[in-house]
Structures are given as structure tokens and as C-alpha cells.
Amino acid sequence: MLTARKTSSLGHEYTLTRDDSEVGTFSLRKGRVGARIVFDGAEYRVRRHRFSGVHELLAPDGTVLAATGRVSRSWTLTVSGRDFEFRRTAAADREYTMLGRDGATAGTVSRSGSAVSGDLPGLTPESQVFVLVVVLLRRRRKRAAAAVRGGLLSGG
Image (cartoon, rainbow, N blue to C red; front, top):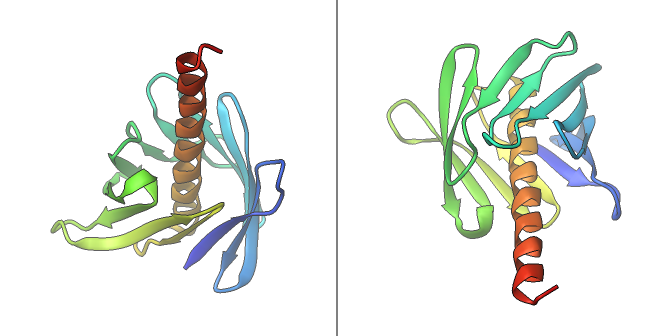
């Protein structure tokens, strides 16, 4: 199981572990670059398209390795020409299920506090990290939108 845990209380820095061994780090960013990932000795970037809700995983040379559709309650991940469907299975985006070709559960992603874990067989290791980052970026976006709505409703 791959797990990302927040390592700084003020920032958006995370440590990646697989079976209790550190395998990388990433930091969430604002703007077009949603995250910078250092994994297995290589640096990847996650590019976020603000209005379409699409995320892309970029290799060190800039090529797109994986991409999502609009990330919402259900969304699709495309890796090497294959599509993987994800569906939210718990309230508040706490859990997503990856569906297999037959519609059965093929993997899961769960979020607890400031950590997110994934058991995603069939995906490349860097795509698994990408899915965890996408889930965290969605959570951050939803929290920011709630804060704006709260400010508008309170007259602030």
C-alpha cells in the first residue's frame, strides 16, 4: 500500500511510503503546477487545468504519462491508452474505489486527516502517486471553495 503523509503543519509537503519505507516526496502548489513529485529518483510534475478540472502527470522530459477527466464524484484516469474508472464511495471524498473492467472493485484510495493511502494494483507506481495527489488536490480545492462560500454568506 502506498501512503502519503503531510510532513509540515504549515506547508503542503508530503512523504510517500510503501510498506513503511520512504519512496519519495511531493509538495502541492498553487497555479498550473498542482504538485512537484520526487519518486524513485525522478522528478515529476502534476499540471492542473483550472477550468476543465483535468490533471496531467508529466514525466521529467515533459511528456504526459497519465491524465484524468474532470475530477468529481466519478472520474476516469487514462494511463498508456487504458482507462481506469474511479467512483467516490464515502462522504466528504474520504474514499474512492477503482473499478475493474467488469465493474468490480479493483483498488481503493482512502483519505484520513492529512494522509491518503492507495491500494491500486494494475497502475504503474508513478500513476499510483498521481492518483493520491489528485485526491489531495480535490480536497484542497473543495475546502477553498467552502471558505469562499462561507465568507460570502457571512457578509465578509
